[in-house]
Every structure is written in structure tokens, then in C-alpha cells.
Image 1 (cartoon, rainbow, N blue to C red):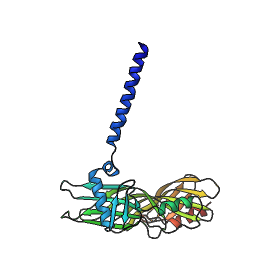
Image 2: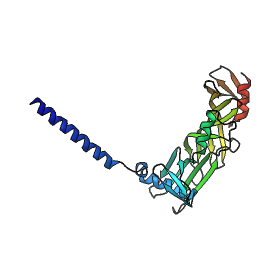
Image 3: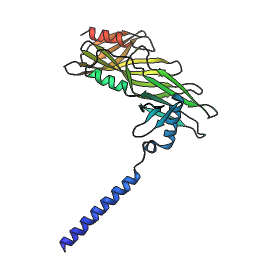
Image 4: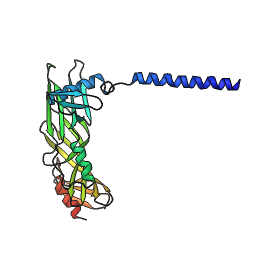
Length: 263
């Protein structure tokens, strides 16, 4: 009797497992479905506005296809959009097309490249027109003077009616020098209306050395006067006095020169 009961239980478990697997396979959605219909529509509207001659595909990854060329993967990074009750929407995206920048950064970290190269980081704000029939876009480079940057996070701080938003951005800039690579982390405010920084301070730096270990240091920043800030290096205990009015936009190369010059 015990054998029969065990056999029945085993049969039920196997049957239930098959049934659950079958049900799960039926629920598997496409990438577009998983993204959500409204957000997918917004992404497609944005990509069609930026690349009017390209086709958008969602599987196996989000990509655009231009003519007979191979699909180019699209990394939206952070993507945010708000939709009003009347169907109008506005939003911001961190847009990377293709894998060239990612591949370049990975090679740079492994010291397989000797220079930083030039790769633009683009921020795109978008909104529908008052009629709702057309999507307006504003695509801006993060910093034309910095050849290699990568955005990691943003939030919309303010979006005035009829204008473009003020964003808070976290990003990294990559600066090779001999056998080292400095990856400087930034906390910044970026004005999409003017295409300029409304504030930028370094929050930390990772230094990779060819054949050596990576070091990571975190900074604390305080304003000491109307024209100067103090950047405290928590790793070394040293303080860098940096001339900067309010709002303060720190220059990366100048700061790195002071940082490494003090060691």
C-alpha cells in the first residue's frame, strides 16, 4: 500500500510539474510585451523620431536596423516618461547605439588600447507637441570636451512648462595616462534648455594600473568660501582647495592634475 501511495504521489508531482512548465511557457512574453505597451510605444516613437529611416526590433535585444545593414543594439540606460490623461507624454533617455563604446571601454580597462578615443555620450529629452501629432526631441552631448564618458543614472529635477528639463546626472569619465586609467565619478546638474552644466563635483575615482591592483577613493566636498571649495580625499586624508564659484563646475583634467600632483 505504501508503494502504491508513493507511486501516486510521484505521478502527481510529475504531472503537476509538466503542467506548471506548460503554463509557464504559455506566459512567456516578447521583450516588447515585457516592457509594457505604453512604454514600448514611447520608445518606438523616440527611435523613429531620431532614426526616421530605421526599423525598430525588440527581440532578441532592442535594436534598430537601417536598410540592409545588421541590427544595431540600442541601450537606453535609464529611460523615464510621463504620460498625461490626454495621451501626451514627455521623457528623457540615455541613448547608446551599437556596442563600440562598451567594447572600447573594456579594452581600455585591460590596457589593450593606448588612447581614449572619441565617443559622444548623448542625452535625449522628448515631448509631444501640443497637438500630440509629432514628437519633439532635443539631443545633446554630455560634455563635448570630454572624449569618453558613460552615464550611469539620472533623475528629472525640474521640467518647466514649455521648456526642457533640469537633470541630475551621475556619470564617469575615463582618462588614460601611461600605464594607468583614472575613472572619475561625477555628480552633476545638467540643463537641457542651455545644454550646459549647472553644477558638477567629483565624488570618487578608481585608478587601474597595468599589471597592478585597482584602487578606489571617495571624496567629500565642502564650500569654504564664495569662490572656493575643499575636496577631501577619504583615502589619503588630503584636502584639495579648488577655486570654484557658485554654481561650481569642476574641470576634470585640472582636478586630476591637482589630485595626483599632491601624491
